[in-house]
Length: 498
Image (cartoon, rainbow, N blue to C red):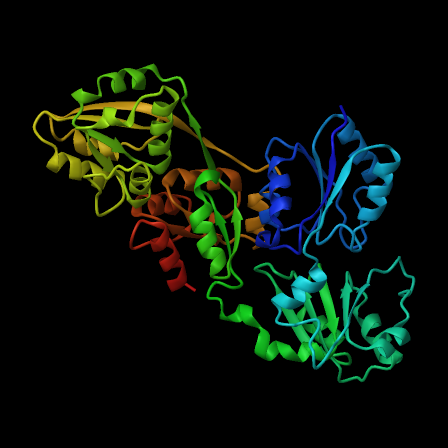
């Protein structure tokens, strides 16, 4: 059976600017053929088990020639795979998507086009430049600034200048002097406002403003990395009033989130709303023990326990999944008091209509152990389903009461993970990743494992609690600990440390 190829626009870099359809296709892809310069947050969405092919298109230098890319798409589809051809921006705007679509159609291979947000519009917008404005520009010209070898740009600058409006050049970093001189020779004034925006929509975005006369020298002095967008026209003067990103408190900052994929949502969204770029790069994953005879037996005699204690949101979720899989009614838990290590775990319980009696003020195992040790009745029985790799602090505190009976049951395993397309160690070395957010000691260990031999003293770790911070310090990271062990507490401490 022949699979289908989706020519997908990945947008300008910010993972939040992916279309809903693009994100869904990336996350479910069986094979991904991708260009360079895609945002790390986008690459992190690719399933680790998907077959990936880096075709390396960057600044005119191709790891794989276009003919071979076409053949690769056809070969993967003939294997019956759902193939995502992932392109920066929009696949039909200077992305050679049309050529690939023709190739597939001629060979009877089904394909679909998924438009993307083009950098020609998004990057100027992120710099506060409206490419059209009623009083300044009623048209916009999008032009490729890519040069073929040492050949001059094949652009009719005189026709562009006579048409007027806004001029947007993509892939024009190396050709910037020629672009500016061409527009001047075409008839535009030397004081025409102009700008170059590099790494647009990411935390590394940099803007250089000037005029057609001064911009090349300014860029040469200040530096600029590809990809970049060059804009010329009166609309560039709007930036002083319309540069909205400067007012977002976390603009220009990039964070790696390391908690399991299913738990990143709330924290990720809060940071993005404040202007941060977020790379969801789970350092650990949890594996549910679906067959668990010990837990099944404990549930059959649940009335013999006085307290049911949960030490993580994952553990609480897996526990109820275990009950549901066996068609065990929630009313079986009546008469048993509930304990939760913190607010996140308590929220999972409340979502089931259950309100825990015991939640410590400090959200860690030791504090939960002290609370239960002090408040549990004489000869209390405590059921403790949690991760096999859980820390010893909770049990150490409970053991100080010789009359308490604790039944500890491994409910899930914690496994370190590393995304195959993102070299975290190299990102740290290059200064691309210097801030990370940790919600448990195990996520710190997963991050360190993925970073390999990188110098972790370069990384600032924002930690949900002291135990997590202690683990981060063991790896040499600079630590900032939340005052309250919650998502809001983490966001608050990040805002305080700018």
